[in-house]
Image 1 (cartoon, rainbow, N blue to C red):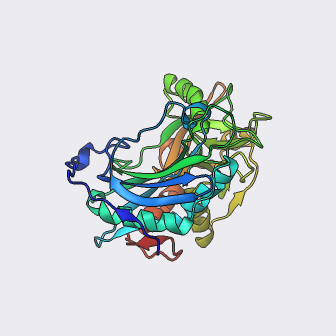
Image 2 (cartoon, rainbow, N blue to C red):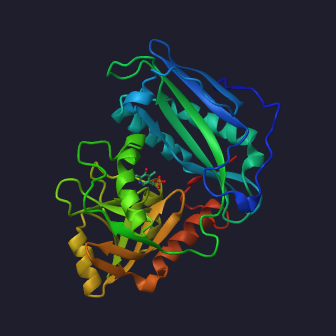
Length: 354
Ligand SMILES: *Cc1c(COP(=O)(O)O)cnc(C)c1O
């Protein structure tokens, strides 16, 4: 067993009202911290009161962006138990991101143990209203005081948690997304498959343009030919064309979503044909024109599923399934949230009850 020190807060904060939660505004009473020092390794695992961190202005994270993060959730089930959804997959992915960013690997078992203890300490912070959850944000930053361009010799691994509201307050509302023409998110050999802040910083410009035109997200095409579909802002993308569900294959520039992987497994278990392959935007447009583009949806931890009601490419605005959620999208949403809130049996063995 790992020896994780726990320092309880003496000043617990007031919890926000369930209808005020939103996303990412409030933080629980405690956080987990683990330090890395070259020559020593990762050391001093501890749960402490939630507080600001103090860093030297030369800390490398501020200058060269050496950082990685994860996102997952804790849920209260219908029978009142606290549950985590595939946390092992998140820490495995964190280590793959670490590898790409030259950050030393963490002990996945220690991270999981730390997370379980942190959630147990702040269990009261998991909201219980329907559709709400405790969003968990593990992240690692380079903390060495040095302006030289090289991998940092010091890091901090931190886990913070934020109670978050129901993503869909009045049923599932399909979103409008726009295919980005000018900018790219990632290229082969770049950092697209790592969960690192830089990918988001470089995507803000495209997002800003989409916002201005009244679209909620950007659909990114590949960085080389500007032709093959990659993903949406912070979600993976799926198309149902003539009864078959198609999602871009993991090609090195797409983030390997855990929700994406879960959806593929659910589709297979239900006998719905699903393909991971290259798909061009022209194929999507053609399917739209010949009436076989039946559903489009994004997948990610925050929204689970985000049906796309309108897709804009060049000057063409394609209305998908009359702007309503499709049958398969609804089934996937019901299945995954059913497992996450303990309403249906977890035949995939994805959940960990605390
Ligand atoms: C986190 C993320 C996703 C979704 O991954 P999940 O594990 O399903 O939450 C998709 N795309 C990007 C760019 C991401 O950062």
